[in-house]
Length: 77
Image (cartoon, rainbow, N blue to C red; front, side):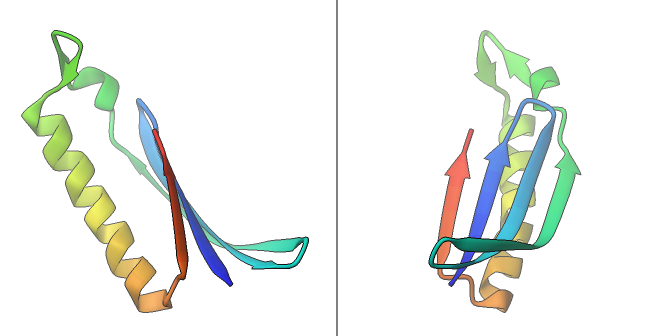
């Protein structure tokens, strides 16, 4: 089964796609976008600009997830 792992960090948003069969896994692809979200904070919260950028990047990941027919998505921030 295909799994997508999404890591939303303070500087980059990454996605890796793995094929997992039993105890074996193989990375098939990875994508990375520099977001600079640490610079999009005001009063300890993500600004509208930061939210919009995150949504745009994640939307691109969703398009790829759908196109590849990925069955499981795991996201971490």
